[in-house]
Image 1 (cartoon, rainbow, N blue to C red):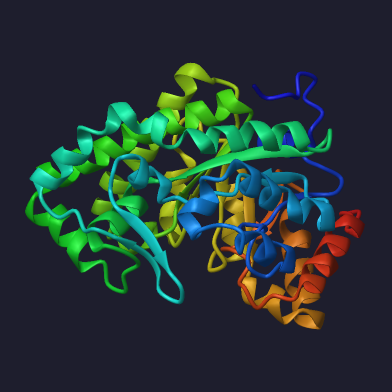
Image 2 (image 1 turned 30 degrees about the horizontal axis):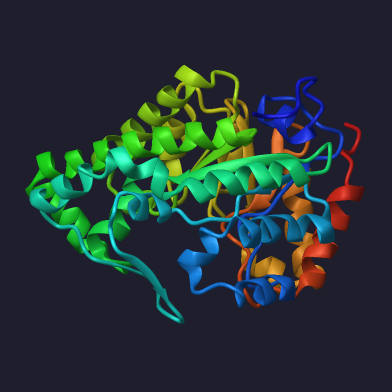
Length: 353
């Protein structure tokens, strides 16, 4: 279970709305290919799926960036596609291509996956062990984030068979056979609630729900396939874990971020790079906001990084805020640039009015 009974971890306080003198920070994909120690550890696994299911290796990878940069939070090293894997959908990762899944494109295929829900926890049990191991190895003031992909984004991979440029297959299925697609979304909601609850029981102290492809949907479909499933998941987690902070990251939502912010039980809103800082300040009146440095600026380093990060800190640092990227660290990023960013955040203080 979470090990912060006195609520001393700054990241958890920030998610609950407390304004910090020095903003908390962590980075999406902070444990990844830009770190040489990650590449060395990954080479010990028999592919990426095996890496996610090896508690010894996944624990080591989760902790690696903390040793370098002393982030306020660690995020479990895993992948959003471990949910379809747990439901029995064949999954592999090809170098230079990304995830490859056997496409699910009709009601019969969806019903077949639904039969595997009862065995889900057993199939992903090593991930829960990783959570417990990471929690045992964390510094006293560092929080542990568990996570899952939101149903819409996970469904895009399941239906398309991997990463897509136009999302045509998944959107056509949602339009042409809404009942079948809703069955898939409902299945993912049920699996994700259980998956996140088990992560909390294993030691996760906060949760993030990633909806990476939320921004490809028009308004009505967004409400149906992004807002409604996320609300069900948050409510489902709240039944068992009413006090665990939850971050929702519906990337690319634009003006619809306002609706995401209104989901009951969401503590913080992750913002992508495209969100203007003036709009972020408006959202900050509703929730803690998290974001939204351009990962390319981090990769570039130097004056571009300092200028972009300082503008975000000056705009959002006086309110409830967690510094992060607008998406994940990209592989070419020099580790020294992340150190430069960590130092900048550590020294920043709000200017007196």
